[in-house]
Image (cartoon, rainbow, N blue to C red; front, top):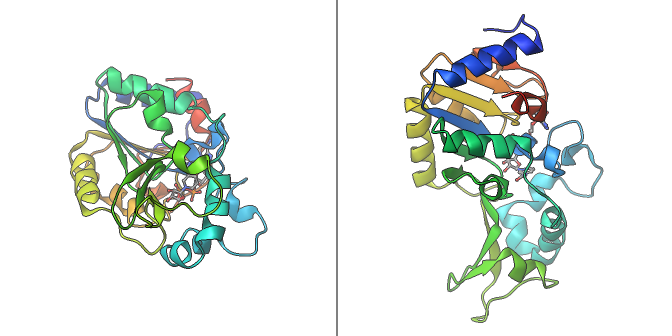
Length: 244
Ligand code: NAD
């Protein structure tokens, strides 16, 4: 593992590896969007550090969504409300690397739609997208604007409950997406993992499917997968991506 080098030396290695790779996959999490102003969960300023009556995992769970829809939507609207939120340098640089035919796909745990807003096309959203909603009864689709422009619990014209197209705690990930992610990671020549604590499963275990020798891990804090990294950069994504 390359660890005992300066930040600049690590950036040079990263640049050389990107240059020599044509099938790069980026696996990311909430830390990718903190520099856009969206808090993560476990980072230094994450939601887990805030005092609240109930753990975030409880509010964002399947059971709570259906048993306390009013309270759920109060939290969820607040969390997803900021219309000023824009992609940051990491989102934009990844989209450019896709255009340059370097990055083949982004696999993200984020639900904020910022990779797509930055121009990335091949985005696998393991945990869904908070900009999409649907009726649990008739499956009619609703937009972010439909839900944000009203208060209270949203209901469909058929009378059904409208929920976010997001994987809640206690719900399973799409098998199709997981299979695709495994295929992409097991066949890529370089894997860049960034802005994730690698503690949410099964997303974290996707790292185990990488078979190459260019596993780059960029995260502000230590993760349980640091020992697997070929290049470990414990720093901010914005600082790293503004250099490449
Ligand atoms: P996490 O909160 O568990 O971990 C985020 C990690 O990113 C932390 O280790 C933190 O130190 C690091 N980090 C924060 N800002 C960084 C930066 N600028 N540069 C480098 N590292 C940075 O997030 P997770 O691992 O993605 O798991 C949390 C779950 O919560 C996911 O399932 C995700 O869907 C969800 N979530 C999504 C959003 C979003 O869509 N933006 C926000 C919060 C949580």
